[in-house]
Length: 233
Ligand code: HEM
Image (spheres, rainbow, N blue to C red):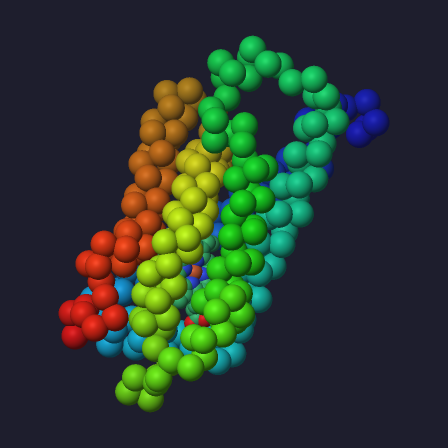
């Protein structure tokens, strides 16, 4: 009966963790695809704008995908918050010493990096999807009859403060990912310590690649490696 079981071991908690794992790994899939898509900025204006237009022209498919990813984000945040609150209630005084020895910085800061990602995604949608944070993007001249996503991204990252926000948020997301991907396998029931240790190393490398991939874009803009007039046509 759930009244006598510690909250950390109830079936409901296992269910929440499985939901967290499924939605989390799907969001990771999106993060990887989004990165590969955006890295086309290095191939130039024509390439990135064609890619963006292809996505925009997908109509119902695009909206279906957006709805699913928004639902996954919502479930992930909702269940994650409940789990965090349950853990806090079950363990009001943290095991200061044990935690420092056992848990990584990433695992102890999941709630904070998670909140940072949420705030970043809200800002990012207002910035590049809804064009609310800088309405002047609406006035960008069309290139080959298409909205110029390439110039919008470069104009955005030309502002050091905006690039700094992106880099900080991406660092936070990468820290979150370094724990999330390894804990995904633990939720699936993997308990072998040697394999788990290897998985942790792979998760760290994966998170580092995501970090390098995403920050390469604002950094390349700030260093004038990709410019409004340049970029591999
Ligand atoms: C250098 C980093 C990034 C760049 C250049 C970038 C670029 C873009 C652009 C141009 C759009 C608008 C697409 C459109 O409306 O046609 C977009 C949308 C979006 N981005 Fe990013 N992004 C970056 C990082 C991230 C990160 C780290 C996340 C984290 C999850 C993220 C999540 C999203 C989401 C959820 C959307 C909305 C997708 C949609 O409209 O269907 N982005 N991004």
